[in-house]
Length: 327
Image 1 (tube, rainbow, N blue to C red):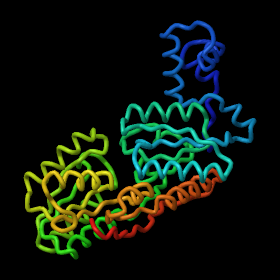
Image 2 (cartoon, rainbow, N blue to C red):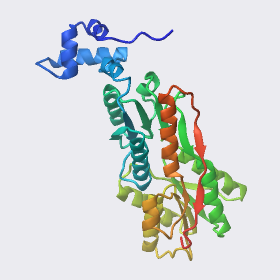
Image 3 (tube, rainbow, N blue to C red):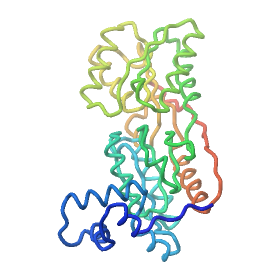
Image 4 (tube, helix red, strand yellow):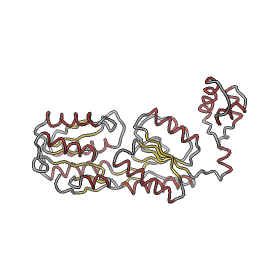
């Protein structure tokens, strides 16, 4: 049996106020005490009520707006991904509302609630936060990229494990004896850990001891530099580094010069992501390239299918090694 939709009267009854008061809170009209506003918002949240539901039905149950929630646009991978998503959605007649969470769970919840309250048709998300209750409670069509947010939300991902194997195997094939890896802290849920697992398993298979230095995506650049300098100071024997993203790979290559390390003569570096802007700025970097534009197109296709009421499954796309030649 379909769940009965929550109405304005239900919110008013739950909050202990009049229907007119609820309407004034929703439309931000007239003077209302903070206590009254808080009661109404609490009631809406408890009942999972979303404003403008009636208007949405009148407009054929669609707004032609899709919400995007990602960590940042100030990164080659996410910048290209969000641009590709916007382009794909535009060609399908959708506008985009975008929220960059900086991987802050509180900020992500705030963006998510704002987007739900605006009655977007669906969401495409890729922020790396756990335990966001709204993802579990909403029936809104959602597709995730590279992150599990709910068992009911399909995920578009690239083959991170195989990517980790490709990067590590390349360094082994180049004759590197002391290979170090950088990755997210282990307590942060991210598909990057699949890259780390592949690195560790392949190194152990070759009788080597894996060493991973943890660098959070959200750390300031100077803090990242400090971690990378520790690699060279604590392991002067290092001759190969598998960086979990191209931004870190670029920092490693720059800092290597401080320690008089020549690339590729006595240090090999392999990155990850292969975004277009990175390939322009660092053409010498060997990297594992994710199919970013294809990931965006696939995510939009899955969301459109969900909007049409179709059942969809998660999709994993292949990666490939791009030879930069000198790194």
